[in-house]
Image (cartoon, rainbow, N blue to C red):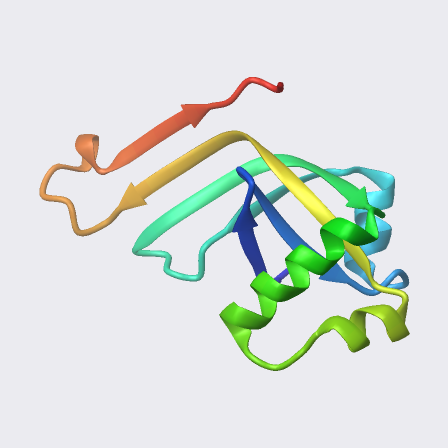
Length: 114
């Protein structure tokens, strides 16, 4: 599922409505995969989504999100009862299809939880 989001404090953050398929799927199984939109220079993050309920953190995220995408998502998030998720990386893959040598085109990183 496509999702807009931000990278902040070593994690990927995004929001969705509480009744969306995305939210229902994550409630059943919080493991997920996030990737960039550029398939030829892909970054793929595997992790576990956690709901963030701390409104102080929401305020920081809204500022960053507004700076990236424009507008003001704050009122929309509040009025829709949206959920904010944080996905900390467990494994990340990077692949550059423009590389001359395929064996050097992919990279993998593994993260330990803190």
